Image 1 (cartoon, rainbow, N blue to C red):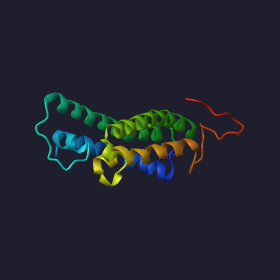
Image 2 (tube, rainbow, N blue to C red):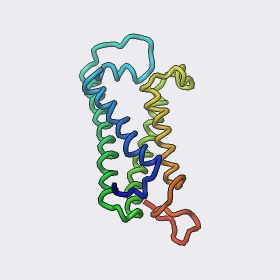
Image 3 (cartoon, rainbow, N blue to C red):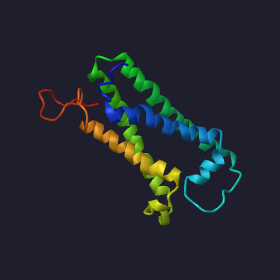
Image 4 (tube, one colour):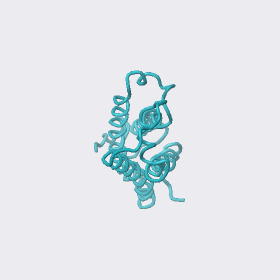
Amino acid sequence: MTQFLALPGVYKVLFLYIEPVSTILPAFLVWFTPGADWFHHELIPSSDPASLPLDGRTTMAIWQLGNCYFLLSLLSSFVFRAVRDALPDNPSAQERILGASFFAMAVADATHIAASFIGLPATLKYSPGLWNATTHGNISFVVLLLSFRIAWFLGIGRQRYYFRQAGSKKSVKSL
């Protein structure tokens, strides 16, 4: 197998396998079963029965959200593997491309967490024990992903190639 020096160990497992599966799953849940009605109801934990059916605009928005999840899955699956396979002996180039992708994804993570948290009713915001799997996926799991992206940028648990440590002979290059 081709080396992926810029994405070692836990980063490789998380960003090449776990994240793509975790983003393609909601897309399929929305598009096929249980469907947009179910997903819409799950966005905010509630013991109330789902109000069915959704109007056309809401269904379309949920399907488009599913498409965004699908896009994230494709990007992390195919683009990251293409970087690994096309640049096996160039960890600096691997890291530069991953860094650009991770920066964009980190911004999206932060805004996704904020939007999900702000959208929760006051009674649920600070009660994660009352959250359902969808809410934990939108907040807790995305916090985990963001934390690992930040750790990757900090060089925790990996060697840096393009984004050098402060004080090294070469200066830190920016995106």
